[in-house]
Length: 513
Image (cartoon, rainbow, N blue to C red; front, side):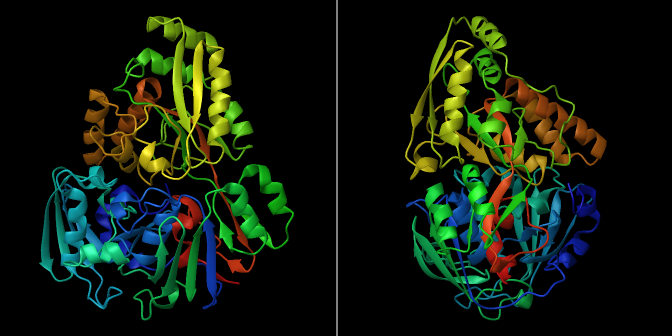
């Protein structure tokens, strides 16, 4: 992984903070104008509660516009300070001290300080919290206000990745004592303050005057995000000039976009992966042989060829991709093998298997087609898949985590521990396979506190192998981020690959050409 290394974070926390607001290209940006984006991933249940944010629309409006986090992932992979200027750790990485920016105000005029950080993070560490970030902050045993602009975190065990975790898009900072109001109205410290918000429909923001990032970010006077969940409608909105940019283009329509001289396609390789999670605490998926039969029943290369049209690569049922520091490239690649699928069904005591698979293109572009390809390939192994097409609206609240077998996507995370803790740690709210494995959990805790890079590589390598062999998530493909932008909008030479649309920060980093 590019940027500051794990050991470097321990030694150069202050230097990391000094990177601060740098990282933009050397060519000049112009200020002013309006930026309009057509985005999928919106739902009528959307709100400014960061604990619930799960898809592009609210991540881009939340972390990417209205609110800030303590740290920020730069487009080049480096970790930068946002509301934190710098940080430093104890030698065992159990105690972290963050120095906060001074002179920062919320959109309602309240000054930012240590109390805001502590109360905001308490939303996620509180007992019973359903926040998607709960597992990555659950190790915090104490949050102490040292001064008005210094906070100290004590962890149950060492974690040298802790500053990376503070950039998680759920961990938005709200004004202390006003959190309910801030969630209701969208009151943050971000570059844009809320003008209008209609959940599942649109968001409008205007540039916040005298923002602490000054002239280095937030170049538009106004931004508007329009919810367009249908991929064809989204592409047409760009081609007709209704919007300036769209996310998640339909690969089948890419040629049409490339033929338009007013539009450019951005393609970024990262760790985004498309998945089919199954609840391993629910029959028949509680039998590892059934899970292995499904692993051999899916034709991964066919999916890359027909769903991604080559814009990605084959997955190996692990969420750790080539962009991660400890990616295990030595694992044997799972291959389509109907005979092995039949063998594992027999080991499970079954002659055949009939299951439902819920899918919607809300999960990822082409998810329904991918489910149907899976249906066709699995049938040769004695697996009968009934594809249930689910509505796009409400998919993440009504299907994901609820139905025992469904389509899903993950953007990936900057560090292995962040990814594993979010989706595979025992008891994590977003553990969408309900998977429990004693050896995996043992390695997860050990690797989190391990300071030797070689040892950690071995630990994460074994964890990837366990997931590939026994886990409940089918990860058939890693998909590039492919989005499109009107040429009247300029963007940096390096576009972030951690999340869609320049790490969801296009409103911060792009400008009018």
